[in-house]
Image 1 (cartoon, rainbow, N blue to C red):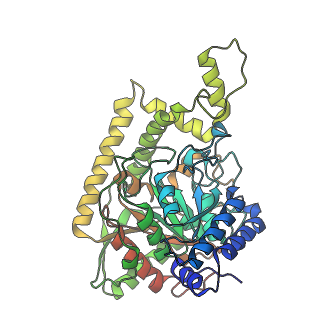
Image 2: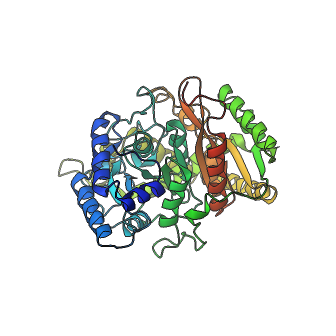
Image 3: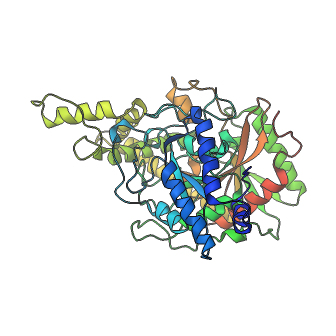
Length: 487
């Protein structure tokens, strides 16, 4: 029986002949079929994946070298373009639309012999924290099907959580990789802004969006990052910075670390008391192991969520104006005598879901002539203050730790009637998107309610190597330390 542990072990098994790519794909296709009720996938490429697997098996027999992701079974979020495959961003307005080119990240996966097995469900246009805002219906948390998996990359998180693929690509605009990773008990990385090309990623808020990675362990995530990261002629924001080598991630750090945490975050009344106590307990373990862990005053905690939603909705209002029913996607059936404005209104009203329409309207409002300075300009000033604060923190510290989310996965429908409560659930994740720094959620804890939750770790911009190294070490040393794996 096929059992997956890591990409490295999988490649060893392929080379010694104890498993084949075909066997592996068949295993994951059977797993996807058996857990179809989770609604993690919107498309599964069964025939295509099997054909690719057979070709890779033959290439090994022919003695050809293995690509870095040879035979690795990967899912991609429904906001990432895969040529000649449907991409809809979880929205009716893009129904029946197929990508006409590959996203750079997808192109690089395929170049290293990855097998893309399917497309995962997500909140519409990546707007949401629960994966309940999708034209394809909600995704269920595989550990407790009465609870949400987080969002917006909920399907991607569940595809890894439930063993429906090896690794998955999501996108993170304000926590959409790290928060579902936290709720599902897997690893979720948001790289630095610019580390991974956004070419082929359907835009929500262009100065925030970043393709991220889900995995069962840190080395797997690092290996995928090594492949998809780097400069890209199609994205001027993609950095020329050296891409971290995956092999370096398991190297032991030779010195104690200087670690910061925001005092106000751990004292926040929104934070679950049990999460607070376990993170404080981890801080004591880190100190006992020789690390310096110090609180840092963070006077901007109450401003980060408002600033984030002002700026992202403003960018969304602009980005989503291209979906008008004229060029592609959904087109409303209106009276032929209707003028163009009526046609636009009908197509966009019927094609977009309520959460997307709410954010478009909010973004249009904050960009309007009478309110631009009061909201948009002020939010940009807050963003600059946060960047300045970040620079100060990383002048003195190697890493910053925070909770990933204020609570464990909540019940389906629990927050749908209160958008403000939903938005405030992003209180600990939006900071790294506002400042462009990398962040990761690693699953270290189990709550007494039976659900997992993680620790969020951040480092300075383009310091993914040190972030992944310490994350791997902490996963080895502190995961479930003193706890049962599941209460």
